[in-house]
Image (cartoon, rainbow over all chains, first blue to last red; front, top):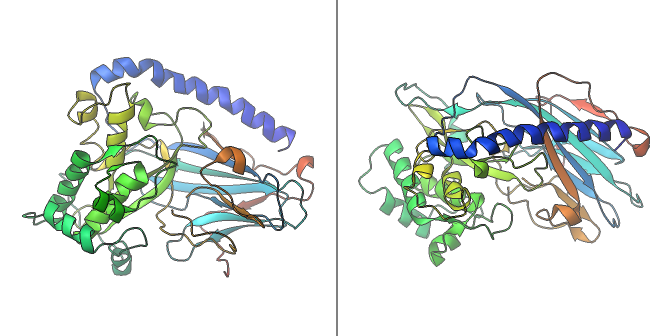
Length: 339
Length: 60
């Protein structure tokens, strides 16, 4: 990092921390108001910077950094800038899902491999108006893709059986989806000890009935069950970029350093509405982590969030991609990236 | 997707930013700035601008 970049980042931290303190101070008051009301209409522009220094390198070092590649009515990527001492640095796109990433390859013998990616984007809240039906259209191959199984998300066996049981008697895709959403919140819980976002091995979750997990587990199970019920659904992988404007400290970035703030949300395709925002995992997270107590799902603090995350979410997060089982271009080591 | 890296020793633990190592920072901006430029500390590097609607597919 050169001096100019260092000063730029350093200057940015107090500004973000300062703004993050305001929701923090207001959290008590807001919590008492029990308000969580994302509303589209106000675009915000953010920058996210990922800096990598490969420690103790050996042989050829390769790096892959996700870049926002979801273009939607709630998000608009603007540009990517990168710098470093790699011999190759370019944006690569994973072919199946279109997931964009910066690929960097360093010369063998490079003593201090370093690469930095800065992505700029606009984002806004989502909140579906259920009274306004539309004739949503989507590419048939896309819908088929997001109803299909993946390595960790089978849609047969116990997943299918559970989905059919949950949605028994429900005739519309909306009713089926709502039934799965409610089932997730009634049966799963946030487990803070899980590493990262969780693995999302939904078959194992159902077989062991170990329903503790994080977003990739809970939203992954939600998506898998919805797919198994015949409704297109997908995980949307991203990262939190700002505190919640509604004072929910568990539902936003805690500081300008978001190295561990990855979060995946979910979307379900409903013919009368298009791709609809869903995030039952964040309801479960608020229940577990918003206060020092493990709140029940019907606690007023959680009851305020629960209906809003069925059809909406807050624009304090950026979506990278909707890719499962990503095959990293030019990789020679290890397994696929889970998401 | 988490940052990923590999060396001759294998894949780095993407869930452990401190030993990987990586940092991710964010900030809200309300106006456009000039793109980041590589400096003297990255003598062998370069900076590029890349609009998100143009992409390259890797062969592998």
